[in-house]
Length: 121
Image (cartoon, rainbow, N blue to C red; front, side, top):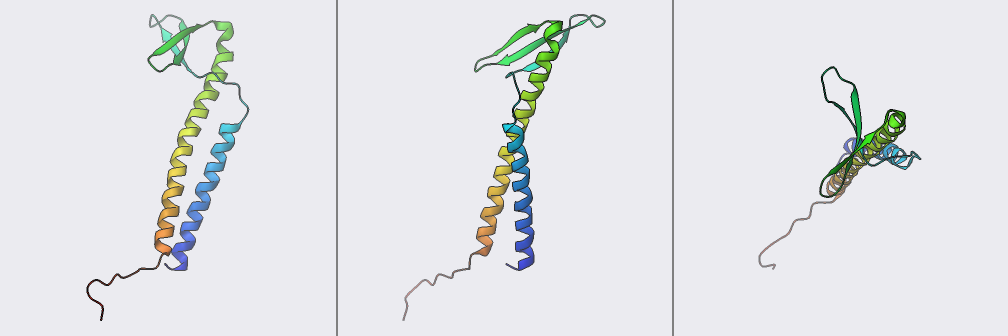
């Protein structure tokens, strides 16, 4: 493997590691969260919106009605949860990309070995 290819691979790995660190910082940030998403529902097209907190469980989802005075409280916490889940999904993808690059880097750095078959004299 020539040094230019090796250098490009190392740069790519370095950039992926930086991205992983950013995602880890986001995931470890101290935010109050609720494990659910905020759902807006209108019973009539011109009617007022009603808000529910959708809380997923193993079998189904539960919906909790959110009063107007609680809306901003749950909106901030549900948004923090959404960012956390998105960061964790991206973290998994970046980890897989790093592993793939490191494995291919290792394969390319290995010397080729020829195996001679048959009777040796």
